[in-house]
Image (tube, rainbow, N blue to C red; front, side):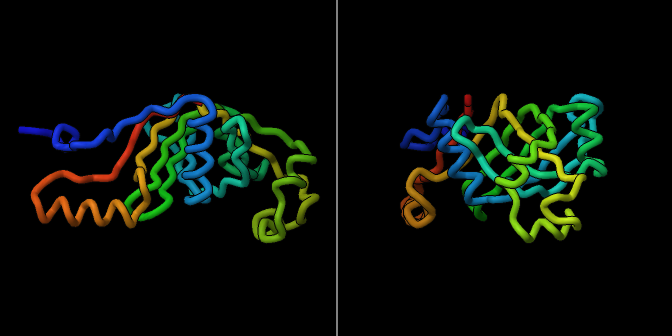
Length: 178
């Protein structure tokens, strides 16, 4: 029996390194905007997961978020900085998984850079809320699943493939090495 990858007539695996990996992370995070942010990976079989908004992905591939110093997340990051983030940018593509190390600071300049007024929902004292902390996630490894040419081309290829009985999947996947 053949696997889907053996039936694939096109290249569908490409590992990305350095700047190419960073560009892919930036592209997919921009589409998703939010992730499931998982903590407590090394301290037990179960991890805590919560939805989090990515405020920025810089040119080094580091992800920047905000949290509160009185949150469970903050306590978990202090106890164990290894994190895993899961992204889904659309229904059928734009998937990303990153594992990395988180550092937490009270860098006021970075808080100001990442701030927008809607965040007052969580930080009720506004930009100067003393509980605001910056999380920087430095990815150590990752994996992506995407389309090569966008959803329109992928849909046409799948439709033609189903009509002629061939795997004409426009997907691409691979490891990310920042």
